[in-house]
Image 1 (cartoon, rainbow, N blue to C red):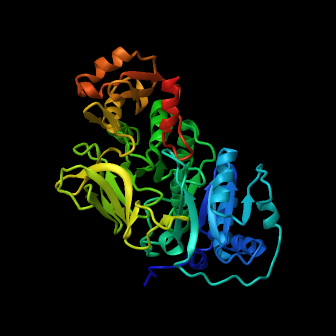
Image 2: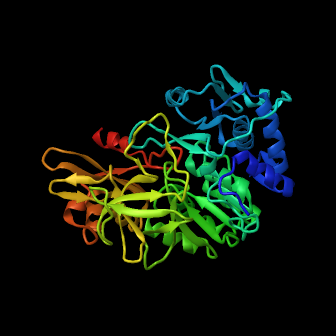
Image 3: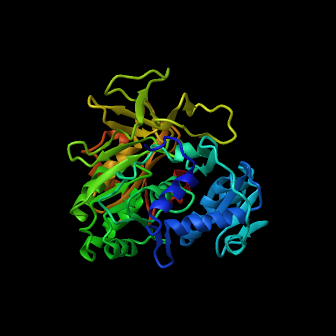
Length: 480
């Protein structure tokens, strides 16, 4: 029988004992790590950490080329009874300093090429030896603090217990993605998507292969090299892969599951992915740093192109009205998700209305159809209130993606002296587009109040490490 609540290090020790030679992680151009090596190295580093930790927070600042060292450090902190705080070395120095101070880290461990005041290089720890007895870990104790992307404000630390990270339990004979020998991704350290991939390296059937620096050509070549059966991207990566037409130069026929996370896939992009990856099922995963492991999953369906699917893995989903009560199918309200057990919370917040009785407010507006399929209307913070109308940025973005020259698009609100807010759009296109031409293209598809009155032509949309568009930066560009 599989335990429902298990410390993360125990999960690794158990699998390493039964399958020590299984390659858990491969970092392209850097090396690999078997389960046995992961367990042994993490134990050694845990004994080298300044301790005992006893719940102390340890900031882990690593770059994507250091995924192997990061994986060892993360596990070592958990083995030593500490709380791991994953942070990317690509963060701006003030933001990095804020997170380290905010979580109250007592120790900072960093990777190659990174210099931090009072930080300990991973290489120094890996060369030390110790014989300290490591503590027993309570499954309900904190394991990690992961910071949100901060697209709408200051990043917040989200806590997860060991039990949260190891739920739902995985049966050894029914490991995820068993159709694959290799799973390929290029998610950065410090993101929820990156942490999910690290946990897949611990629990899933295939070896997890990551690319330190994403480019469409390198990513497609990696898929081809390993004949990957499972691939994960964010929508921005999907757009780049399609724009580069990697399917014309690389064999992608091995991919049976193509998963997209972090944001909703525009319907046109999802449809084009099914053509570019001829044998793949395209799946959209909807969750958040706060809600994980709760999620919805949608297998792309041309009859439901805009849906994000139904709750999966024991998760629960509801649409709530202004008073918090569930609304009827077809009615728009706030989207809430709930994991089967062991919910997350904000670090240092005694109360926050994003968490209520195990439910997590997703910050999105949406509705359910009669069969329980979820459709998003917009981010609650992104809805544009223009005069008497409320404009869904997602709806306008979907229409923009239908333009044959548009590779990527983002819609946002800008101040207007009469209407309060006006619709603005930023596009990445194969040719310069004029506002009048864009409005003419959209007019049969959208209502008059939904048509953009401001247009930015950009080489690339500004995105954070998680691949999400930074709309405040777009507003700044539009105002200038």
